[in-house]
Image (cartoon, rainbow, N blue to C red; front, side, top):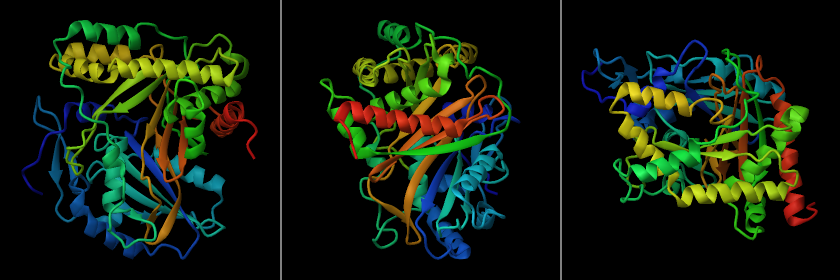
Amino acid sequence: MTDDGDFLSADDARILALESSVLTGHTLKLMVLSPGTPIDLEALRASVQARLVDAPRGLERVVAGAAGERPRWEAVDGVDVAAHVRRRAGTECTTSEDLCRVVSELMSEHLDRSRPLWTLDVIGPLADGREAIAARMHHAMVDGIAGMRFLEAILLDPHDTPARAGISRSVASDSRPAPSPTLGAGDWARFAAAIARELGHPGSRSPFDRPVTGARELAFATMPLDALREIGASRSEHATVNDVLLAAVAGGLQTWLGDAADGLDLRAQVPVSLHRRDEDPATAGNRDSFLNVDLELAATDPLERLDRISARTRMEKQAHDPELLYELFHALGAVPLVDAVAHRITDTSREFSVAISNVPGPRVPVAVHGRRVEGLFSSSEPAPHHALRIAAISHSDQMGIGFCTDPTVTPGVRELAEAVAEAYRELQRAALGEVL
């Protein structure tokens, strides 16, 4: 091992510290490949090994820091790629239901802290000839956008173009710009206004407010990106794709919860990436803030719900709430006790009921060893008192949505995925008329 290394950022160290016997700390990206010849595992390992030079975090592990210091990254001599890139045993000829079961198991398994914090598990072949690759990456190593950058570096290629040609209009070019230079930790009046908007009106007691175990259950849904854009463009005040996604999720939750939804004021926490275009993608970790958005379950008309959600997010973005909150929490981070209290308040189930993330993925079709990625999905784990987590990721012409629960607390995640898909179709019919 080498003796040098750099310390985890305060954000990354805090995320690492959240890992426990019931929390694994990682995110999962599921890539479903088109039917074809089964992946040559040794060739895949050799390709990943050669490409890791472009993703140095994939060659480093986390080691504990000295007393009073944060953990640090340490380069690993001779990374055992076979331990990171493997075929999941016993998954041949699986069905789509079996695929969900396998990735649910992976979500509940901890990554090996003695190694770099990522794995690629090949699953299948399924009965129809498709295979899947489940990529797990620790959240202390990457957030959503940095995770896609990592996969672009070590695994993905543009479809029908030479390998390593580069992925046009990748997530790296879609990162948000740097926060406004007018923002500053001393601008307390603006901080106070952002706190009042985002944290000043707690919602109802959440149905997901339960302690969680280490069990995980996943389900997935897809929506066409063009239709999401058309729905947003049909409104008098233009709604974003993410607004439409939130409205569809809200409609699905209303149906899925049934009578239990009556009178509920559920709020979604929506992570907002603050990555800068000039960052080094090889070492980018977490740089996230958030918006808290009322899901408007009381609205019976899907378009009214969409318009209310869109108006809220528009106002929050125009006021620069994500940037202000990021600056505020980093100012508070200088006082550990105050920082811990602030995070404890913002993370309560009354401030938000469910986290709903949306990460921009590749805008062009991508492939793994010549096999087109037909579906790309994301999954993030629940948290204590937040037993449901929803994660979306765009890819080419569709959006893949992953639903992750602790089934001992919140069973029926597959039914939730179906309810959200139907709520999207209802929203599409209301906005655009009957669609074949």
